[in-house]
Image (cartoon, rainbow, N blue to C red; front, top):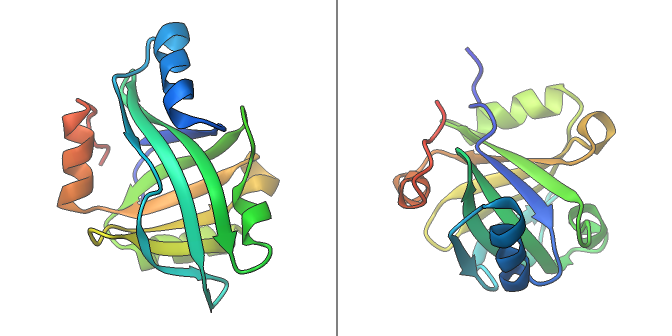
Length: 162
């Protein structure tokens, strides 16, 4: 059994999450969306260096998958911003759940997908982004299963994958 779930979320780079959410509702029937500006993160680490990541996102239901419309405003240390910014329109990442982030990270690293960010939300939800662009064309986000996160999915009426 894999230490990670199937895809729970797809995220697209945008330049204005609220406006992008309105377009997605009109064009793709996704939503409703919850917009979180400048999401507070703690314990941000990039390749062993303490860093920062400032992003805003709109989250909505798209079938039985969450769609995230993400705008990365800033990131440090040097080089991280280029790794995590796709601009408008591109697939930014696909996200999966894991019961143990460290075990999932070892699997991703073993696949040749290096960890580029590890952080926690201000509520203690741990996640990491892995650079799978060479194989998949986008980042992979692994977030550790947490009651607040699964509750967020349930609030959007999305079934959390095993």
